[in-house]
Image (cartoon, rainbow, N blue to C red; front, side):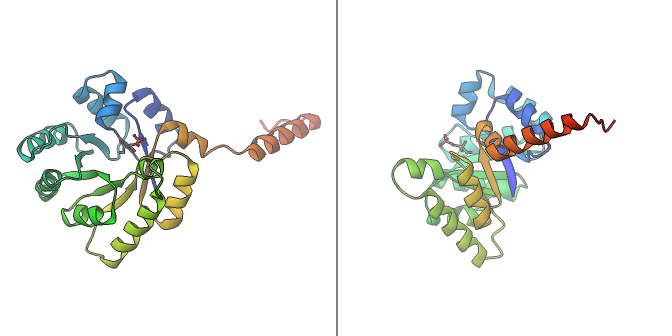
Length: 218
Ligand code: E4P
C-alpha cells in the first residue's frame, strides 16, 4: 500500500519524506490556498522533495481550459499527476491527458458508477472521498469495498484506488484490508499510525532496565 500525504505544506512534506515511508503527495485548491504560496511554485517545490506522484488540480470547469491547465501542470515535472474532477469535462480531460502519457488523478468520486467511468477514461488514480461520505451519515468505506471489488473483475482497468478524505488511522487500516492501492491522509493522521501507548510504556520500561545494567553498546 502506498502512502501519500494530503497537504501543500512543504515543511510537513519534508518531515514525512525523511521517514522514507512517503510515496507521493496530493494537493487541492483548498490546500494551496491554505499554504499561502503560488500554485505553480509550490507544486514545483513539492516535486523536488518527493519522487513519487504529486497531484496538482486543474481549476477550470470546461474541457478546453482544463486541458490547457493540465498540460501546463504536467510540464512542471515528470512526477506531476494532473487532478481533474469527476465531471463529463473532467473525464474528457482525463482521457486526453492519459492518452498523451500524463498521470491523471480523478477526484471527487462518491459512487461506484463514477469510479467505473474514471477507469474507462484511463485514470491513473481515482480518489473516493471516504470522510466526506461519513460526514453525511453514509459509509465511506463501503464505497472503497465496492470499487475494489468492481476493479478486480476487470484486469484491463489499470486505475489505482486512492482513498482520500481520510480522517483517522482506521480508514487506513480498513483500506489496507480491502486491498486499496493508495491512501492519502493529512500529516497528522499519518503520524498517528506510529503511535501506541503500549509501545511508549514498553520502551520506557526497557530504557529503565537497561540503565540499571550500567552497560553501553558503543
Ligand atoms: C484528496 O486528494 C483530497 O485533497 C482530500 O483527501 C480531501 O479531504 P477532505 O475531505 O478532508 O478535504
